[in-house]
Length: 629
Ligand SMILES: [Cu+2]
Image (tube, rainbow, N blue to C red):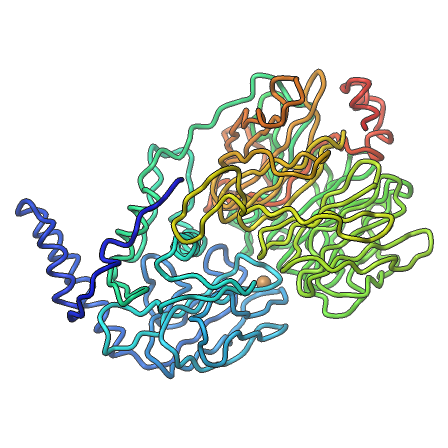
């Protein structure tokens, strides 16, 4: 990962035409005829591509959809490098985010833009439609603040310069500015081309993982021109072994549920299944697609006190559905409000609380009666747009990360009021809490930091930087790191926090005693969700899902049993693709096993929940697992 490569022509002072630059570069490298033929074909493709761009009507229209990968879909233009979410246009282009084929609420918001570009940053607000004119040449990337991985890009190219203009520097939504030649800029481009093209996702049943990038000349920092695909291949490799699935040597307890949010099935037009994995055989036992209700982007789950019901959010929709854990039979499908993201129960009452990430108003958490059949009330959290909330071990508190407003709410159920609104970092997305509620953690997605909040005072006592060991220009890595952190739960015994980081594809390990980052482990691509389950005979496993991979990983934070968290290791990689023995309520037809997001371990062994387990589950646990902390 220690990439120090420069763009091949980074220091070139040449100012050649597009064609001569490309020809010269390629012919110099050629050693035999077949390579010449291949290069000529490549060049012809690039030239044809560029002239198509020059001739196109200078308008770009994106639609917003619930479809995995091409959430933002370009209308009436060909895919570029396999992505249907990017367009090339000329200065003055009118960009419209118009038609909508989604049941959810979205925004169209600037994530990346050419530094100083006119009219930037842009934010449509909800529901996401909007129109803008882009005049400054360079790279523009838009995302949805509700669903951060929904991406659209426009390259505004000045036809008078060689190569497609990516601009001198880009500015990111968190305020950072980096050269387009930097490692951070190309990592973001790599992420874009993986996220927006399902054919680029990491299929662990194949011998090699191939990523298709557009083979086009781009003009970057200092006017250097380089082939984008070559740069990305040189910096990050390609056709690498995706990593074979393997089982942990020590079993887990019970089962792991993973929302395979992007899996496609025959009898519904919205994506997603929930996959149940036996934590002894490590095989998929069942997939629940719920075609009867056209289940739409199942994102996160929780279970009731008896562990018999799965509560399932539909993140690109308005509904919280409930199904039987053992049979997959639908029990309820309740309209709760826009974009329900996460669900958890109160340990004292077994009521469930659902965060509505699309909700603009302050009443953005919905409380349902145990069983999930009906709504009891809407809770005012003093902000909208919460994503992954967490509940206190005694059921008396709830914390929410409010994705749009750089703050986190502490709600007190004793007083039924907001106790604190805590300022945190950019795009807070998920939370984790100590088993005694002494402090909680907020993952600030766009800042790549974690805020440590004292529960009693509501004060941020520390901000843990996840990118301190990374040089965004050269790409040099000096130690553990995480970029774009998402789910971040603390182990049931309070010793360790594990965080999934989606840009770096790393799993970061934080020692909760010192609140320091002590290790990072390689994650499969699209690293997204984490929850803790019990390890047989004592200890815990973190189950880590990856949304652009058909696997999840099992992390043992303390495989040596010494408490040394720097020895944390990935001890298993489990395939989420259905097998012949997997029961299912619909036929899987695409993105098999892909889209890993929400995770749930049954039995639920977090402090406060574990004590309420039925005896049959309790007896599977050690005394210390039955009473953690
Ligand atoms: Cu969205």
